[in-house]
Image 1 (cartoon, rainbow, N blue to C red):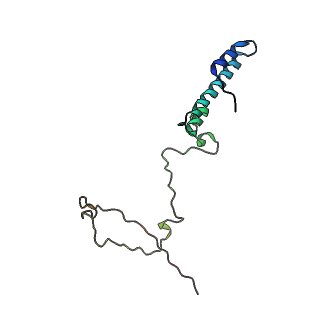
Image 2 (cartoon, helix red, strand yellow):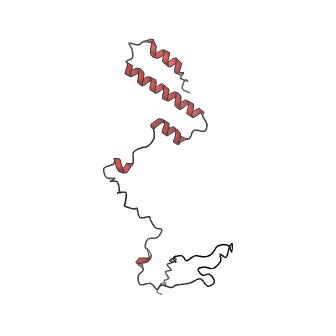
Image 3 (cartoon, helix red, strand yellow):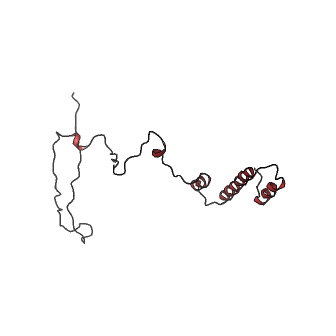
Length: 138
């Protein structure tokens, strides 16, 4: 186990031989000790998360990969990213398919809500279901 570092003891050591270290060396050494002490306190505190420790050590992430890397050109703000779908083909790929409209047998727009009977039903856009059937030739 590493020995515990006391900031007051380090300060005394830095003042012992002023000719041995330059001011820049003292500043660097002081920053290293302060960082070590801060990290030790954070590790002893059981509520600190790894994400918080990484922020303490390396600072907040301010740069994005698409702005730093040369091949990652940023997208214009007005260009919307098309969300990925779940299937390989959309309904437009099946242009020759038969379209069947199936209205609900018991409910229509303006009826009372069948669950709570307080609200009313509103018209909605119809959903699309693609059904593909096939058979192997014998």
